[in-house]
Image (cartoon, rainbow, N blue to C red; front, side):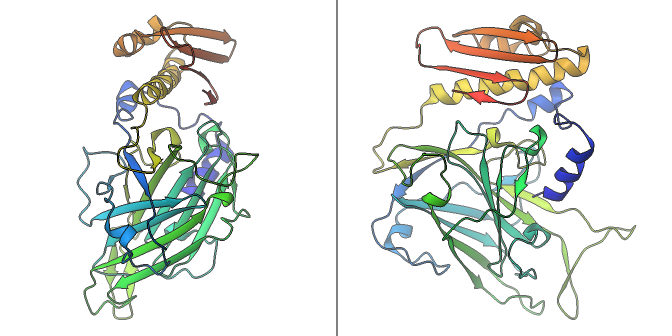
Length: 361
């Protein structure tokens, strides 16, 4: 989503063009990311766009999607939910999208699918690598997939020549496609994504129990008018196409999916009794990114980065309390900074983040 806009913008502006400029913008990035515990399959999954296997029937749905900017925006009028399963070689996804008028037109692989109504998957299997994968699919089962070297705002590039090898996908329509003369119910997406297509550089080709990934899902929904021959995108009084709606599983806080630090977390479990995601890790990660965002605001105001937590506390006093259990060390040189955040009690609980958005656990 927003791929073309982002590429053009970053061709003109520097990598930090999307930097937070105010504390109000910073506060929009404070909602807690979603979590989901992915259960192991108990029977064979046939990829046909239906969830009629026993495995699918026994697991919970995610929460319904919200507006990408957060709960202060109106609740989406159409429900969207996802559920996930795994075996050692694959991640399985099933999404259900309420839709009274199912439509889709793009048929060529790797076209920009979000120009249709679509469903999108963002995957980051390696929390210590900046790379991540994006997959878009429409109601015709047309896929666009790419790998990002890192987020656009940090100078990342989208590689559309990359493919999610051996991916299987199917869609099902509870209604008719591209027919404005009736009312439909929903469409579904089912995917089988091989782990070997997602992992690189010796990370292994299998899912490991208790492994944690970052993931998010997006639904791009255009405003359509019914016409005699089908559907057309609605225009405003100036003849401009109305902007799309962006509904997501884990809200970002702004209209940009390419903030992987704001995505949700999934954990692969063998049973519902498996250990929960480590709250200490989630807290440390959030604190690191909050320092990063505040540094951006500080530099916008002062034309330099802060060299202490106390300086950032003048922008957002709560950051001092958030770091009470950490030792925080700033290293600055001209237009560069690096901040190390270490637990005062657990030597292995530490993270480093710098002005380029590089984060090291």
